[in-house]
Length: 447
Length: 180
Image (cartoon, rainbow over all chains, first blue to last red; front, top):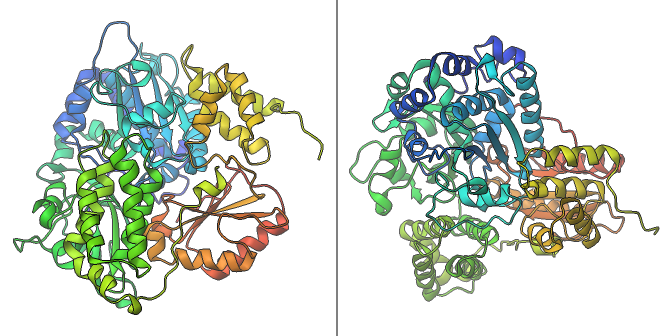
């Protein structure tokens, strides 16, 4: 069994409640930080831990925190990104609904470190019931003196609020999230300025993912060095992996970084192998945005080394033969999976979720969806496959936020590794099983 | 049909004021998204222009500021929907585990196509993008409730229960939390 830092107590009965959470050592990090540490010492521990943003980008958290501007007399904000919407990712929902207090505790300790006196948890609207769980946990934290004025008798005060979104993947992008938190459309902002300088209401702001903030709890409790000792190289600590698709045991697993991908897929401790004894065909290892890899390349790198569950190993080989850890949304596909059809669900997703600000993304995502639809309907040509490649290439890097890249990479990787399947569809349209393709019904309901 | 006055009841108004109090002085527009959820739940499951205008008046913002937000986000309905809006996820993980078949099954069972509402105004079927329930796929949401690990039989039971209950489901409903 690997070491668990976040989910160690996830099966303790009643762990949702304040009493049980506290009995199992909850809120110790707040006590330690506020009573015995200076805010900059907390930041230092997070730097030492090597913790990297768990939302997908993997940017070092301590460094992100140290960029926060601290002009005199200006409010600073910590905003938790609980907008989890990356297809294949459901770890934050699991963590928040099972152990809500670990997020509240992490928010208090982190807000103290950053000198924020008001903090927000922005949660996707579809997780409305999870927001209610968090509201209850926050009320309990207030009632027990962990939130509000003069926490633990110190001169540090903090108010913590939840805000629900309205349903938009783009609000997981931090500047779109801030726009949404300000009551606007979720259109990403042009950077710079970065949120660390001008974020919420134009004030210095740090935006961190749920899992990142929860990880601050063990880091402060046990020290940054202890956290850094877990995992492998620059992939320190543990990572929550959301496992889904054709596996025997879908679910959320906390892994020590550095276990092999093979072990993760086949061992009974994790995914428990491929459903119905089928063979593995492909894996999307880090949420829909990252490149899909065929079975041989996900199990071993192009150099023949065992691929590990870590930022570096999954990225080994670049996009030619590698992928990314991303958000840890691990989607497994068996030998019967139609790669083109799966890609169509991704393309439709990005088309639906594009905010429409940048032409390459607004037009390109819809164009890609239509071409895939055409190919799946048996009307595609070989030129369509080339056109698809060209479009994704012209979206990537040409938009103000990463949604464009995220829409391009799945298309590029599917063509790179499974071009023969696209060609099969084009050359043999009569052999195609008639499939029904659902268009977005968004417009039917929301005008 | 008698035209209802558009005004939050006292209980909701208290929630609205609580939302507004969460943001700094002068930043009350931040409360717009949560208030739109409250409005949709209270005023028959959708945001009519009159309802949106009412929300604008509460926040003292321009009507267009409400329209542009309501039309951006997927969860706000700008047209009437049935009492039970069935939102079926069909992105990758759900598709891999049979989401399309679930949609077809519901279409057959209710005699409607996706995007349509049953004649009795009970159900609207909508297909949506990833709801973060990939490990319990296929899934659908009705109100705030996630219905997970769906199969045809389970869908039938859910629909029968919703029908028998007859009440409008909203995102604000209490839900049964699945603790795996």
